Length: 120
Image (tube, rainbow, N blue to C red; front, side, top):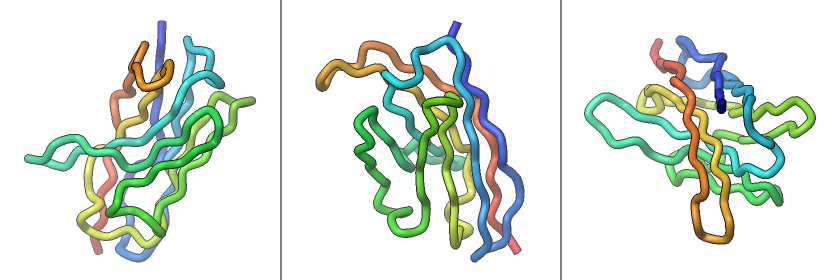
């Protein structure tokens, strides 16, 4: 049974910093692309950052230069370092594990999410 558990969310001031963590179980972690998505009230879920098995990283346009994704395959962990957050970064952040074969998604798993609120 796949389980993704996020932690580290909370209230952060604009311009501060916050680190989200996600621990995965029930998957062969090193074979999965890992990502962070977010969903704000009334908006669609959007990609924040993704790191593939070969280390290739993709960032959403709105977070480029501010957020950093990393993974630790030995610990089955993926992290999102949020620097200089803005109020518009307020959302529920979800951890995602995706098993890919080329362009095909073989399996897709999600955590329950962690709330991040950026406010002074």
